[in-house]
Length: 192
Picture 1 (cartoon, rainbow, N blue to C red):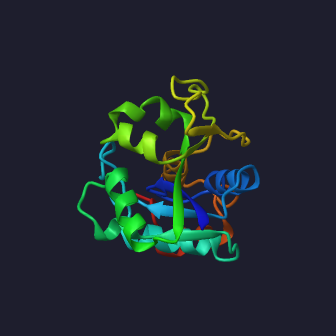
Picture 2 (picture 1 turned 90 degrees about the horizontal axis):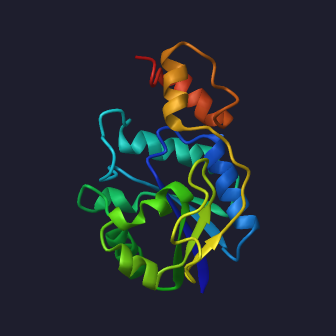
């Protein structure tokens, strides 16, 4: 049974920090693959700054195209909105009975995990690989038997920062993978 780490996010846009996290978690765990689950709507975030779902999915696909251990996943596009992780896990479990799914999340998300729908069920039935995020390195779930802390290089880089740089007319070519940079430039995304 292949072990799949699910890396959820809006990826608005996907950037090099996301790729570093996925790569380092793969290198420092027993996962076989990481799937980037592009979320149409996180129930804890506003949707107003999101690009179209399929445009974000296309950017993820282009960013990871040459890595066989990474995959773009649109499972949440076909589920009710907003997207709840527990429902996505159930959906993927039904579709892929030959795979074991785990979660990949930052320590900032683990620190607020109790706000998630059915968080107790998730913590009881799924393994979580957690990477450090500045300002939330330790939380009460860090020592849980279903949580494995994975060291990855910390970067203070976010999609919000990239969008603000683009709006300000700055060059973000070294913050996103080259195909994503080309796509953003051609489509004039985030410029206004």
